[in-house]
Image 1 (cartoon, rainbow, N blue to C red):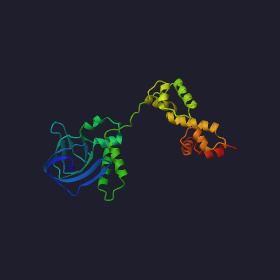
Image 2: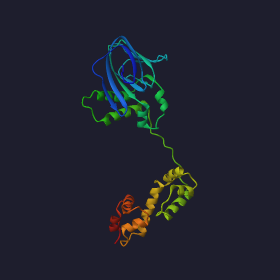
Image 3: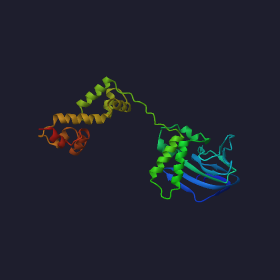
Image 4: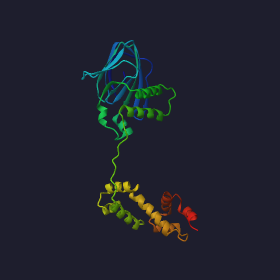
Length: 294
């Protein structure tokens, strides 16, 4: 019953009631269809994108809407509102309306790319190819109802509202959990001491990441992650803290101009020096001098 531009559909016995209601939210298309059903109405559908089918309303005593794969013997039989099916990309189905006079349903279409944009690597993408021909879930149903209502809203809310509903529904549909981050190994005490002592001694100079990594015989990537795991900040940021601390100790006197301090301590210019100083101390060099020096 869905006539997405990319979907192949052949139907008989269905007639659309009213206009199609639909919305697009960041690569996800939601559309709501209402159709009148003749006796034994049916169809064939295949879509290049995954989709969720949700029954919103149906009329007909004892009626049902059956979905089946032509290549499979199992089927999903929808007998009441909020029954739903998940259909993977390129999964062909046939449908049969038995004893129904009217059917209203929501289809949610999304590409794998749209899914990756939302959830990145925090998901087993093999789940996208596993069909679920009939199931019920109260939380998903509640979100589907709100999505359908927004499709019909003559004065739509901000797109962030619909995107939030869609994101929540997809997270529930596929049980998406936070991505597990692998804990990075920290530097040993000796390694950390060697590196920080080197930085302290050369903080006014240009220090290359390769030089620091070589001190502890690690790759640059491994060293960078291990240093941050040990200190809470990247090596370059540690150097800037060390540099500013020594500036405060050695060049705090009012007799030394801030331009000279910037040049001596290895900054590109006074503006660069001021930006870094304020990011570390919370005050500009001039403000710090006024508050700290007699």
